[in-house]
Each structure stands twice: as C-alpha cells, then as structure tokens.
Length: 361
Image (tube, rainbow, N blue to C red):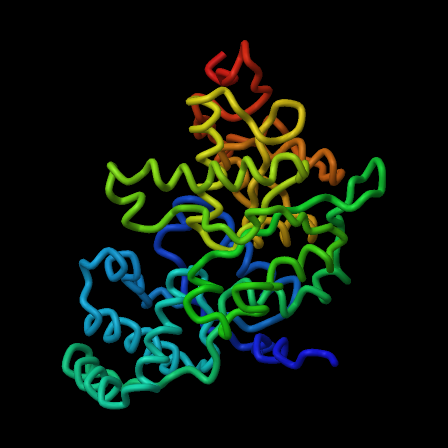
C-alpha cells in the first residue's frame, strides 16, 4: 500500500505577487544571487515581486546567538509583515534560510500562544504605530524557484548536461538545516527526503548524487563560527561531507542556504591550504552554486553578472562542461568596466607539489 505520509510534506506555493525579504549576509557572500532572483521572476517569468527598501534584517543571527531576545525578534518580524500588508502583498518570501526558520518559528509560536501574538501586536504598535497582518503564505525563495522549475526548463538555453557527452551532470544538493530540520513540514519533502533542490536539478537535466553524508550539516552553526575557538568544529563538518562526496565525482554542489554555500565553497580553500587536499576532478575543487546561480546559468545569464567570480572555487570547469560562453577577461571587471581585483589564491590545479595556485603571478 502506498504510504500517504508524503502528502504531509508538500506545501502550497503562491504563483505570483510576492513580497521579497532579502538576506542581510548573502549579499556579501554572493551579491548577484538576489538580483538574479528578481530578474528571473520579473523578466523571464513575468511575475510581480516587490523588493521593499524599508524592510530590515530579521535579526536571526543575533537571536540564535542569544543577543536578541525573543520578544524583540517577534516585534521585528511583525514589522516586516506589516510592511508587506502596507505594500499591498500577502505572500511573503524570504531569501535567507535562517530568516525562513525565524518567520516559521514566530508564526508557529503565535498560533500556539495567542497571548504572545497579542503582546507582539502591542509592542509593534507602540514602537512603530503599525498594525500586524500575518501573511497568507510563507515560502523560502528556493520554494518559489522550485515551483517555477518547469517554466524555467521550458525557457532554458542550457541544461545541466555535459555538452560534449550528453550525460547528465552529477550534482550534490545540500539543504540548509533551518529549512528542513526545525519545522520539517514547512519544507518540501521534510528533513529526510527534501526535494526542493533535487526537483530543480532533475527538471533541468541533472542527476542528484546520493552519498553517505548527504543530509549532514555543513557545520556553520552561529556559535561554531562566530566564536573563533569553535571554528574547528565548523570546518570539521564540511570536511566530513566533502570527504564523503568526493568518491562520487560530483560536477558541482548546489545549496539553498547562504551560509552553507559559503562554507562548502570557502572551506575547500582552507582545507587545500591546510592539507593539500582537493575534492574535485583533475586536482580542482568542487564548484558550489546557489540555486539562483544554477537557474541563471540554465536561463543563459552571464556567469559574471551572476557574481560567480566571488566564489573561492573557480566555476570555469563547470561552465565549460555545460557549454556556457564566458569572457575570461571580464571576470574581475566591475559594472563600470574597472578592474576590481582578484583573490590572492583559489583552489585550482592542486597537487602535492603545488597545492595552491598563486593568482598574484
């Protein structure tokens, strides 16, 4: 008998008219991803998405680091929802996984403890003069891209396929803990079988790689990284995942959490420098993409317009496999054509004799 439990892990995702809440940190890590999200929704899919300059950080990092009290973060969240209502929207979408977890937690708390919601309403009105209006739906932006994956596939200029062999690219999909593990039923597929990224990969021609540590945390954890003495725990988690996936020879990693994407990318540089070890093919690292970057490449966006020059692991081997054209000379040029500089080193052509290629040369 077919199990019915899978239906518990589906969610209704609005098709249009989104209120967009940016992330406070991923604009620094991957600055092109949020712009790509807006461009895709508006220009390629013809959807209404509002990028509100009035919204603020959700203060999730401060909350999870025990700096921001629960009452404060609930009032901040209430203000975000009030801004959404004032702008004429009711479908709230969050760019950040931690924010998504925070918004989900706050809504669940209000549902369980109505008196807490009333107290938050009072705090919001006293602080800002605004009224709380809860969203009709809450989704993470990866949910929205997943929802539109078929439409993106129909408009694709490139597929997640090796252009020379016609074989599907082998993709590691990594799901942020705050998306799937805090409130499993708020994410597509739950914590055991999350499908939000796998669905995109399969719709666009790729093949998901299964490996022993597929659901292991990347190790970010705010207390792990914010406290310098704890960073060894963070890199050890990423190390465990990378060691586990390497034998399966993935072509790239895609993540839906800004912290996960950043750490899986930049810890590869750290491990290469510390141990002389790389995990990709031909002595290179494994490129790490955000889901917006992955969708952008499929739709034919310029990789440097997507901000992929900000990655520690070079993406050119992946672009070559997909047959994506790019200008190597434009990689480190700003919007005005001015040279912006490049990193001292990146994870490329690592070997026992030459672990890190010195890009100063």
